[in-house]
Image: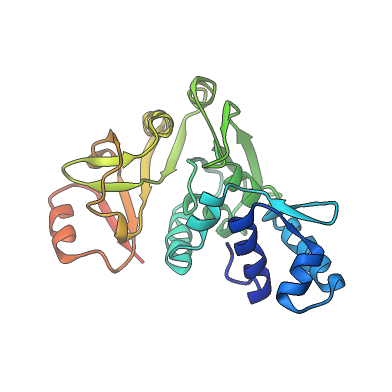
Length: 251
């Protein structure tokens, strides 16, 4: 969720996440504003791809899990995504894996020229499609609404056609012992292919994910060339990471 939403718009999205659907009449009463105002809010939120309007109300455009994750550590994720975008150069071909932080990267690519993004992420596609300087390739494959992404053999095979300078990936947890981990094996398959097809793999992970462990280990941590995280990473973690060749960016 973007930080420039009004308090009322955030309330609307939170109600959608809790209830699954809301009506204009219901929102008007709950939020003490006119139905005309609610319809305007719904139209604005739909334009940002944050919900879908239906007759008399609205339904979520993304899985509640996505909305919940988008609400966490918003400013931290924005700093990490901007630092990732700063690594992109004019003329680059890059891959962006599905995730609420990685999906923010295209927002910060305005001003760069001739960028080609290959992604399995609907969120990244939505963020990039309004930028005329970006060429977009979306993998296709089996759609997972819980991650707003395409996965499976079709998605993995599509990625293998491309060679890129940078692949931006996320994680559910990371450590030297367990490496880069995820709760979804099929997401791990996508990250493995991206790592193989990229000159450099860039891991985007806020400090709260250090030491956490997903159900599946994807790659050794040393498979990442660059780690972008925040300044709350513990001294112990920094000491352990110093033993690797990973370039650490703390923002």
